[in-house]
Length: 177
Ligand SMILES: *[C@@H]1O[C@H](CO)[C@@H](O)[C@H](O)[C@H]1NC(C)=O
Ligand SMILES: *[C@@H]1O[C@H](CO)[C@@H](O)[C@H](O)[C@H]1NC(C)=O
Ligand SMILES: *[C@@H]1O[C@H](CO)[C@@H](O)[C@H](O)[C@H]1NC(C)=O
Ligand SMILES: *[C@@H]1O[C@H](CO)[C@@H](O)[C@H](O)[C@H]1NC(C)=O
Ligand SMILES: [Cu+2]
Image 1 (spheres, helix red, strand yellow):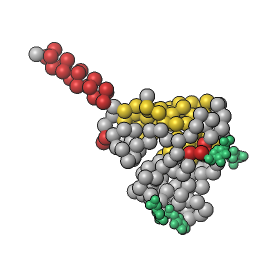
Image 2: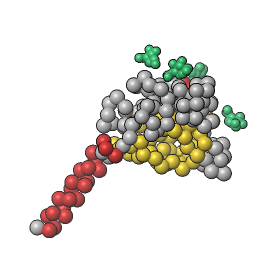
Image 3: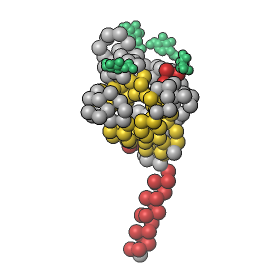
Image 4: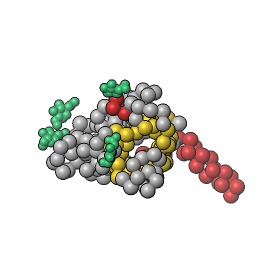
């Protein structure tokens, strides 16, 4: 009996793993084939949100850099400029990840160390990689900017649309894995 129970728990756990969604973005410096790292996306349960993790290097050292999902597909030349505006299916103002109003693609900033490497480990409750159709980011480009996203509330420049995050230095398409 006990053995059967353990077996059942195992099967249920396995089924849940199989039901999860996985994706990844291979990141490149804009307009080049210079690979800088892979960022993974893991969505197991609607309520858990999406776990975003990985690392990228060859960025500006000791910097806080805007990190978003944009709205148009990019091609194999990794021309980040072609990625369109922030992914914003609800047509609202730009914000920080935990603001009540934000673009779906607003993931805030990442921080690089002295060697220009950023380790990413975040959980986001707004994007989806499959469970929600409107907020689905599969096929869209993950973008790293050269400047800090100001969060959308400064009233300066393009704060409420881009966060004044500056040029796009790296990007990669989020693909199902
Ligand atoms: C990159 O994309 C932008 C925006 O679509 C375009 O204006 C530019 O010409 C593209 N650059 C290259 C090198 O294709
Ligand atoms: C988005 O909202 C702005 C006002 O904030 C409006 O001018 C614009 O037409 C809207 N766009 C769409 C596609 O609904
Ligand atoms: C951003 O702010 C400007 C100036 O205050 C305003 O005209 C514009 O409608 C705002 N855009 C959004 C998307 O909220
Ligand atoms: C990125 O920002 C740094 C520091 O502000 C600047 O020196 C550099 O020229 C910028 N690079 C690009 C591609 O904009
Ligand atoms: Cu961006």
